[in-house]
Length: 270
Image (cartoon, rainbow, N blue to C red; front, side, top):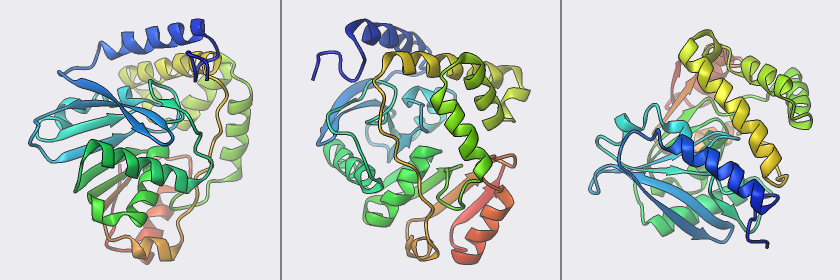
């Protein structure tokens, strides 16, 4: 692989990492960073919090990085040893050698990552695409988790509507600022009603466009819906949180389904 992999060129690597590092200056608490080797590549991990605190792993959504936790990291790290992850095959500082191509690949990657970090009884908090991965991991390796928090996972509970898929295809195919902004504003309707959170979405638009220009095109593994039997096999204490205006599926229907098939999963619509 070229020295600038997974970027398109040395100049692309320099341009994106300058943006990333400038944003990282906003990280509000002292932290250390490390690259963790797995069979899929090297995973960038940002570590903070008391060394003897219970381990808390944070997984961001698709097209997000560990820096997406800036608004809440101080609270999480007050009592936990927190490991904030850049996904192995996405934006950020992680460097894949072998792309995940099926759902089980993400499970294997996470398990290797936990092995290398030497963490056990993990409290796993994950958003969106990372939450889907985490649900799969909890099914395969429940003994490694203490608690699981799923923040608006795509699919996982319900199949997304065709309208979302159509919008996602347009968004993924045409990396124009107007199209990216329209999609992210539609996808996060509550966030764009407030000046502070709308500024965060606008920054996501700029990073999205920059990343598509700088990174090689990646393989996207489509998230799946867990069966009734899967949910009933889930033994890890789980909290499922979803926004009232979630566009991936009906929040009310998702909560009703979980209450019917696995009432031990705690749910809340925010």
